[in-house]
Image (cartoon, rainbow, N blue to C red; front, top):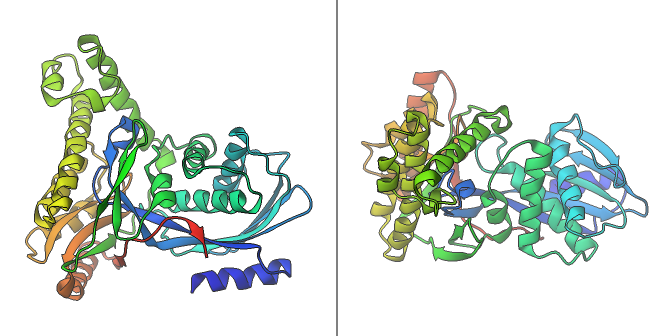
Length: 384
């Protein structure tokens, strides 16, 4: 197991056994993309790809970090929490800083080794897993008394203030609150949530990684958020009750066509439609109707590609390739966009044939090997 490699490296570096070993999962999002920062609904789940932590207490204020996957180290003091030139370290420094802002005093430092099998840049929220893992470990080691929602909110602020990404709360919420064989319908307005069963003997969840790396801090993510906010400000002139796109309807949007720039109209249209899709998709799950659920996944991809414009040629190719495959009931790009993975619902007995076809077609089209993952839905962050 990956956790054993992390523990062994920890022993080699610090000549001790860890006080705690933690598993912090990545996440998939079945439907509801870019709706979180628009106070809509999302439908994520924690997965069996995770970041693992080995952590022990220190008797001083130093924090020693080691990234197993990058074979890189960084050290800092709890008394000087500032951004590092090493991007990976900022997720941990940021989490520690934001925990402190929530009134939890971390008395001493820690020795840390972390690493895992969540693909970086694949849209599976490796950063949220990194944040939730260190947050959970510190909360347990030093009895900080933080609730799960406090850890999720701290992780979100770490992204904002240390990673420069104005993300919503979905990724870290799912990593922390995940439940085996269930998806989470999260209301991003008030953070209420409920679990819906996602247990099927007929279909498998398969991710196809385009191999295109995205960096959401590069401005496009924040730009989409700004375009949504512009739409809200225009809608509010006619409809003062609209605090977010959650409050808007397509008829409202159409009534303001002459005032909304076309690009802003398209962004808002996608979000309003997607929020409705999530609610309808939950009903599909209650009815065990995966065909209807899968159809909505295709609708989501079309909106992300044509209206929200966060897809790319590679992702569009991967989704288009599934349309005529009877073994696939749903496919879409997943994550912030501009690369990463597609998520596919595939008949279990046809997964091998599906992957063989996708890999052959992708390499022929782009000259690049397609990496794929079969996913299982698991519990959220916890001690091993």
